[in-house]
Image (tube, rainbow, N blue to C red; front, side, top):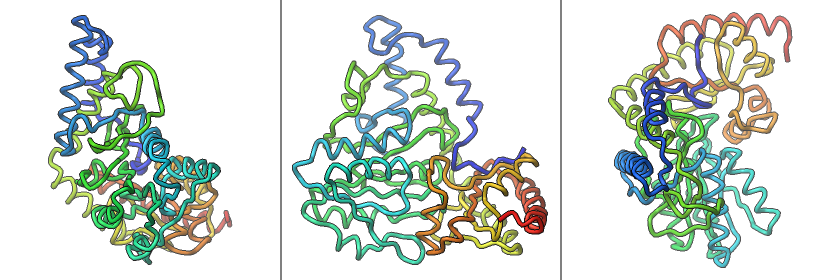
Length: 375
């Protein structure tokens, strides 16, 4: 099997599974309980949170555990507009956002909120001058992902933050799901940041929202005691402990891993440059994501053809509901390219041999499917 869909989800690291399994067996108490078993579970959660905070260079009390990035995104957006509705009803975002950003913003637009989309330059990066123009006194929230999940475009979050903060009442949120584990990102320039453990070789079903300490938001889930007042529910001790383990492992030997992925990205692009495809990912993209368009072949047809060889890629982001990639369209301004795009996503666990095999099969299928005319 050749797995080239790491940006959709990553296989769980065996050491993370071991941690999850051990905590399930050895820490059975409810961390909200006052007896010894409960106290032991709470101590483990506190230790895990401290480790996560240390790696991300934030404060432990700034971490809110969620079921994943989609919940974190919804909590950030709805939590802000609920708490600060008196400040205004203007929100700024981009055409590159994940569906868990787009959907709550679409919902809010039916409730009287005005959503503006900041312009992008020819490389897919935020037009900073346009952002300056869009910021108003009643701008309550700016939400811009640090890295787009389909094309891999990386935004200059620090520069964007400086512009956003020209209005001290505007809150800046970023979905950093595709950054954690791929790069070292400074969260302190953000007010809110969403992430998911499944994107860095951790378990599915756990994520987090970083919330700057002095910021108050309204919770989505009200109820019993938890690790924070911003998200009720019995803390998932095994998932939280495994979150810390996955984060620690992915940042071990980070410079070495990063160098390897950059070299592998160049190798892959060099191989693709000899084929009849258009590469949509550019020099402003993270090396883990290579998006390309294939002429005259439906992305789903290529995806399933590769699957017959046990090679797994993606068409659009796994949560997309569109029949074309809005991200590719935003970058290329071509509906045809956006309708014929596929995403190859690699990691430091991808091998050169896997890339060679993929190129060999992909080249053969390009010829075969074009002859068949699978448009």
